[in-house]
Image 1 (cartoon, rainbow, N blue to C red):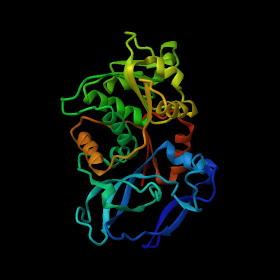
Image 2: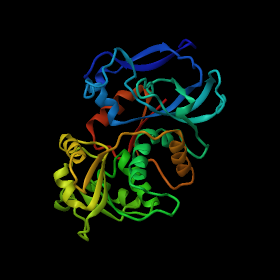
Image 3: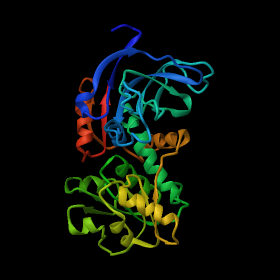
Image 4: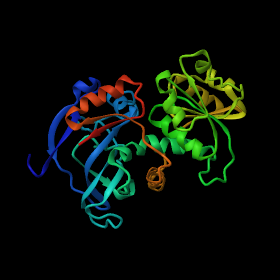
Length: 331
């Protein structure tokens, strides 16, 4: 391979799934002002990546094809190999974890350019695979919990919390972070993952295929102060009866019913609310998560790892759903 080119994946139209991801050679990008060039060691897939490919957000985010990965993957970890002008926080050789610009992506390639504002140092104790799972899923979980007032220094007020789809990428982080915040956590997942979710700290785990799991009822019958909803499969009509008087749902994957409930709540005086989580956390929060991983207080649950040559298989695995934790692609 030419020293100035790299392997990457691109697709040339909406739809087609993994079969439409094409292996190509493209120019290695050059870092500009306040940017670094990272040699990628691992990337992680999030559902939003293939939902964009399907065209589910086409009315809001129309693409100009082809997309060099821009299969839109944003979560990567690797090593800085070149720095652009005016970069002060990093130097060549630094191990890092990055959240690439959402509108550029670029995480399914051998190299990516990233702003230093979206990059944090990765200590030796944190593997590239563990780190690459953090940016979207970890930050979404953290934002959901910070939005309800969770403190991680022991000064916060304990609450009764439900986390749905707790064995998924966001859910597995949310359970751990909620317990670090001192909350009582009930969680839902499939039967095969009950022991795993319990090991993450959940006080009670419901199999979502049982009547209790489908109705979200815990063994005490106590209503939840907050629900971190990580699945499109639960509607407001099921969530609302399980909330306490002033209960709030933080919804990271709203379906149509829940989006309507969110809009309705804006115009009514209902004390029970549904709020949609739109990720806005940045570098300091990502550094906080990396620190928790280093200290052994947070771990990335990895469903499977794929070499770059089999990235299409990883893509299919994510599209199929029901992954336990994160799907990682290693370069």
